[in-house]
Image (cartoon, rainbow, N blue to C red):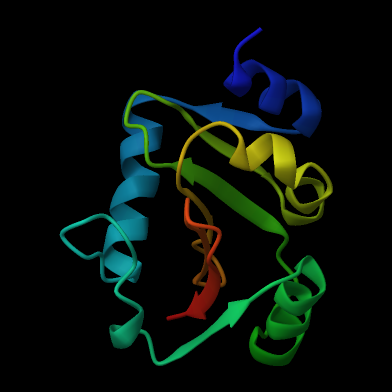
Length: 131
């Protein structure tokens, strides 16, 4: 079983796997919501409200303090272009975060409705930001 298959299994039944045009639509939303460096990271210097975090509790605290809304819908995006994008629930993603981040080097958890992103970079740095 591949790492993406293990991730999909861990996330459970209430997910949607996006390919092709649906995947491209989410990538366009992501690209238009956050500035990306030429080396493929979010350009955090251009994101006014962001924080470097170390734990899921810190992520949740940042969201509770800065996000007005209760949508828990997120998209998991990986740096590997051949992988699908997964639509899931943020709580479930946090529950199986090790399976999610094992799929590829860099991972983004993106909420287009509340316009925030969590970037989990391969060097272990985790940042969250709002647009």
